[in-house]
Length: 271
Image (cartoon, one colour):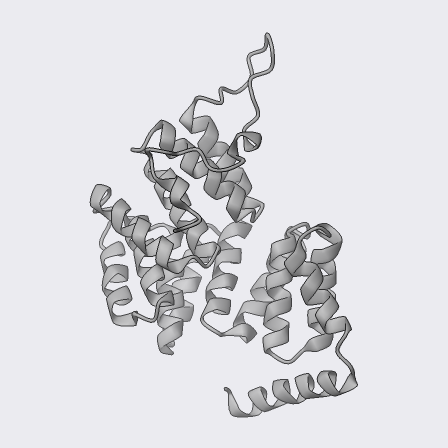
């Protein structure tokens, strides 16, 4: 049974979800916790904090109040993709597509779930569909960039550049570009974009962790340790951060040397 069974609208309340929603202050004019637009704003804020689980609960809550909110559907799909719950993301993308058949963001989310499942040709077809509107937002461009990067197409960089042109001052778009490169295995391209994001948003523990993963994949153990350390400092209670940091600290000189050699070999062979 899926751990996200509470996404069903017949039972839209996620476990522990009530604590994510501030209530109306007694006697005040505060935000209304029964207003789906208010919940949607909270979800967007959590998403920008890279708290995918919290954002997912809030998007689901918003849909429980109004299942016609396309933005909440899209947000829910992005969260599932960010949590690397690809089968679940694909299931819900198919459901969303039935309601929002012409939505470029829904089609893009479906395309990305397919691509991460290894179904690249089908993913490209849905990505093509997401581009058939007059004004394409940043998300379909990032998705297309990741899909093309997975195929080795040089046009992937063009797509990532188009996404950043649409929202040049939004660090979230740059972050999604970095993640797209990372998930496609292009760590050398992901790293400088992560660094640019973190220069402006240094409190994103998850971004530091992802940067550390990129460094580790490149064989740059020292840089990975530094990135994981930043993540641990920001959110010490997050187990995956502390475990990654401790694992590298516990590795001896042989492991450091092997990591360096792997990075050198990758640079020489391009693999």
